[in-house]
Image (cartoon, rainbow, N blue to C red; front, side):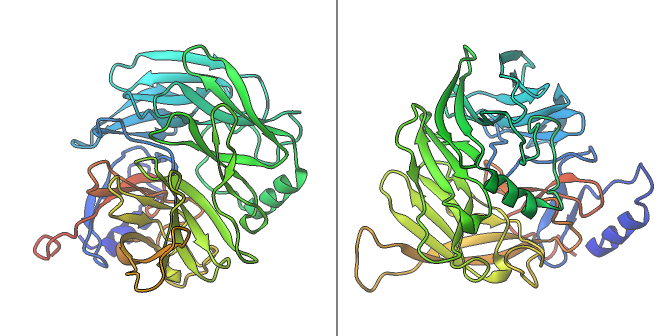
Length: 412
């Protein structure tokens, strides 16, 4: 059945509660197979930098209006494992566990296979307190809060029910929050004892925390705000030492952000624009050697979020509509990127950036998707599928597109 026909059919039947998107189809514009992974309207895959997959690579955690469920990636069968309202943190890197927050400030962990649940801690009752990451050996969680618990322009109550869509006044909110310069703290929580320990204080807006997937003592965070006004990407040790800026701006209006870890914990990847909205890169910084790699891409290929396979041979992006920073006239696609390094025929130096280019392939036509809901792409552990959330049929569901193109016989 033709993809556009299915979209039209879904739109006509939008008032019918029983109407569901197709379970699978071939995108006629790309030849790639798409499957709908979830049945619950309002279900969503996790944010692009939150680990959603169990260590054995067999299951994926996702959110629903009623809580958290887990999906068997082989059978696509799902089951609920925690009831809300709650806010998911991540799936563990070491055990088949998921970590989440209930009642605004209570930390929990649940084994997704057995259902065994343990309360980790009750956090201080700060209006602004947030926990967003768990380290590689699952011994520490990390978060931030405003120390005087004053007015929180960052939405407040961030550990309440999961919010999927971006606010209409996001730009104004970011300007106000940056300008407030409220005293903030980064903290860790011991997953066994519940002990909270402040490791860093700042009047910068501290956000976007993500532990290294391999080094349990290394935490990445950002100075949040309008990207052209902040030195955004930082790392710090869990004892509070070695706070380091990852990317130094080299020109006016240069921006770097939406940072994420490579799976081996060696490289931090991020969206880089030199300057903002004009020239586009996915940049990598090796935390062990300091080596930098920049892959160039075209305006239409810029994406709100990027991600990478465990072997770092493929990248993906979720595109963007014309209202995004790239103002791309034809950017509403899920993309696959094949990176190619540029051969060096000139001078060499350990401090020089290694350039390259992305060769893009369109996987999913997202022209019917409202980008207030960010698709948040990620590769499945077997690297065969790219998972994303979409409202292309009205309600939000979780979908996956196959990396390999379906044969011409199958797609007829």
